[in-house]
Amino acid sequence: AEYTELTGNYVRKIEVKSDGRLQVFFKSVADGAHSALDLKTFWLIPKVNGGSISWQCACGIGSNGCIDGGEPGGNAIEEKYLPSSCI
Image (cartoon, rainbow, N blue to C red; front, side):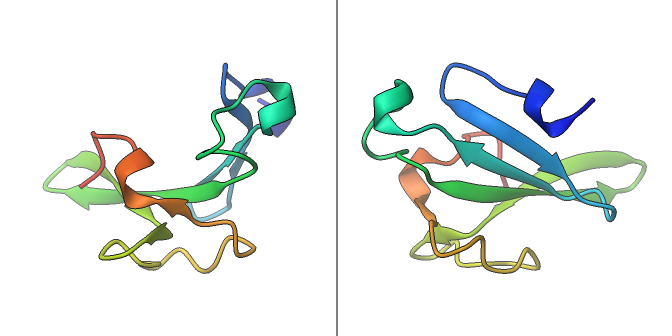
């Protein structure tokens, strides 16, 4: 799928990187996103755990800092808004 096809109510696009990481980009307030998500971004990083895959989130603010994901253009999202399924 093209990155513009991977969208949602608050997600503007998701870019799939060659190493399997996903960079999630939120919409702006003008496009319906909550002000806490306004043009923010974060990484979903796949981790193999004994034959299964779990997802780690990176580039939140606070204790979740950038872990193996790099800096997403300075638009880090606050940790409390990251998906609850992230480890």
